[in-house]
Image (cartoon, rainbow, N blue to C red; front, side, top):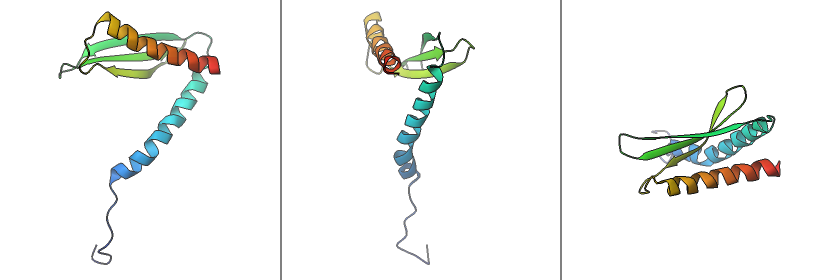
Length: 104
């Protein structure tokens, strides 16, 4: 700092903001390529309440070799955990997955 008083230490969030989205996209593409190699996959979801009373649901795809991958995390902040709400959110996830696999 004494040698260059104009130097500002970069915020670590600058790196993550710039690179996290591209890394997530690359991982998603590799996962999609891996999953399309299987004939049979299982889609499952699970739900629970956090200590903060948030309703949390996760959607997983499981391969025949019992490897499970988190596909989507749904947090129902301010939404009632009714069957209609869950059906709507899970329908969106399943439609997106179907569209992805059809495109391949």
